[in-house]
Image 1 (cartoon, rainbow, N blue to C red):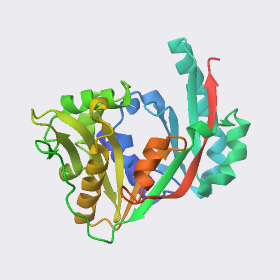
Image 2 (image 1 turned 135 degrees about the horizontal axis):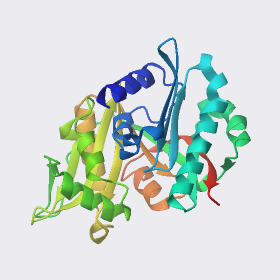
Image 3 (image 1 turned 180 degrees about the vertical axis):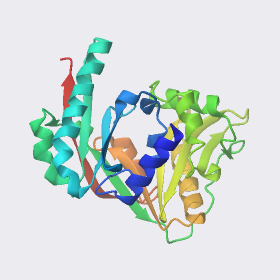
Image 4 (image 1 turned 90 degrees about the vertical axis):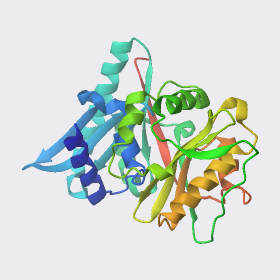
Length: 287
């Protein structure tokens, strides 16, 4: 599996062609969804990759990359996505929504997406925000008794906190442990805030690619929200990205996640600005 992921990563880095998750690609390639070989499809010609489709169940989304010279494969990629969605819905006996997100660079793919039954649903649209990292960033202040820590192998603690913060079981030990083995992973960018009892109350991970950093994900325990911990760990993550050579930073949010957008865009917080939207096209299987 490791060799397969390395091959996929090498292809995407060499041929991004509008792929909106270049910086946090190692995080996505670590997901448990790809443990199921049926959630991955590679199209090849003469031993060379032409296109890749990955069904990412933690996000209920399709990740795909296709060479410009192989865009004739797009109908096959989206047909495969639909077939996989139907199979998963049958297996679970529940409705299953799947989203294909289209950034501006892929606007020409929209007619093909719609032809396979996916319809525009802005609730699934992701706003990609960015900011420069040119001005010096200082270490954020924390209340007395709280401190920044790196993950240092506390995978189970992290998974429990992540699940609690997002109210979801999508984060799993296998996913988190695998992310630590990715070549692009940097332990000093894997951050926690801990309290007096060394319990983690907030977390974020920084990713770096070609002088661009990304914060993905970021979360705070519900009992500690609205106390400034989200801002603090965001700024510490940005400061460490800058120290590692990042000149720009990115962060993503759902279009209608007003609290997150307020945190990221406020001048006293992240000072991020919208860069582009990856518009959500959704189809519900098993309906």
